[in-house]
Figure 1 (cartoon, rainbow, N blue to C red):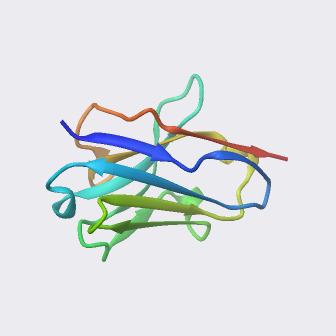
Figure 2 (figure 1 turned 180 degrees about the vertical axis):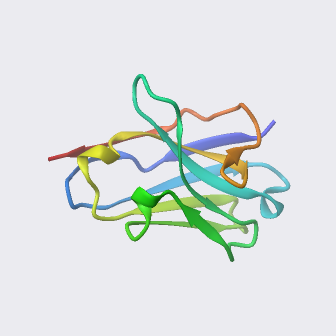
Length: 119
């Protein structure tokens, strides 16, 4: 079973930046698309961004376009989410996961990393 360890969250002022990292223990990592999701209390997990296995194709939710950048390093089994121009509404727990399109492949999640953006 794939294991996912997210890190890099924290408290940041509005307009600031954070870079999230996700370590993936999946031997076929370089062949699978990866995505980032976020969740706030009482709401369903929301798709944020995805990247193809090669890194050549990316997709974003409208609210992230122009502010967030997803990337990956297949040699290190890592996925990243660079978040710029952060807004208080970006406050959430962020998760990474293998995806097909914008849908998680498995119902299995890491512990997530908390991002809090102050106004």
